[in-house]
Image 1: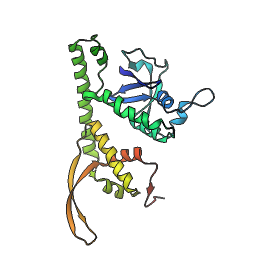
Image 2: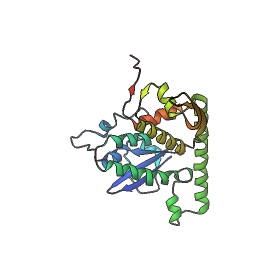
Image 3: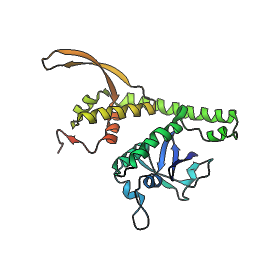
Image 4: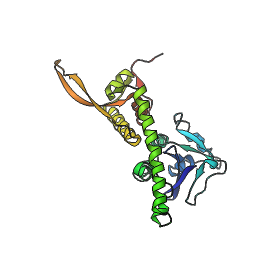
Amino acid sequence: MNALTPFNYRDHTIRVVILDGEPWFVAADVCRALEMPFGEGKGTVKRYLGGLLEGETRFVPKSSVHSDAPTSFPNRGTTCISESGLYRLTMRSNKPGALPFQNWVVQEVLPAIRKDGGYILGEELHGAGLMSDDELLARALQVANRKLARVEAERNYYADHYELVTVDEWRATSHLYLQHGQRVQIGKVATALARNRGIILEKQTRTLSDSQGRGRVVTVNVYPRKLLDEAAANVCAPVQRLHPTN
């Protein structure tokens, strides 16, 4: 069973389902918090999810979730969005409350879920004296083991499939035009994604030439190419290619 956890944001309840150790947010809750109207002749939640990437939405049946807290979940299940999907949906909103909501998710929700490697189902019960230390420890070990297995699998996947490149090397070989600020932001987002997934980033040396052709050796951050692809999708609108393929 997957843990269902409710979080309170102002007048809204944001339900989060933990799937394979990662948070998935009930799409309807996010749309309400972002003041994206639906229902009563205003369409459905799905009309706001059309711009999300494949894999950023997921239907979660009620039979697959469990919660120790009193919270409702539709009998037929509901659509949830991933962390990156939530960021993308937030960036598309023109409401003044969009940025405060995203900051709340980053500063409050994700640390609560990922504390010590993952949200421990029922840890609030321990704080209230309703769960023993041994029960909490057993659940914490289960979370840690799942986290370690997933992180190891991701590390091996990146190592086997993607070379390490700098942001500028990735941009050049992808034939993309990016402003300096976009390149900096992509690097920051890629670093955050790596940290959240337990991926240890490396540093390598590169030789750079100045305007007079003199070379100097510098130390630079390098990232798995796939990680930069994902970071760019979160940061940028469709970017312009220097050499169109058609």
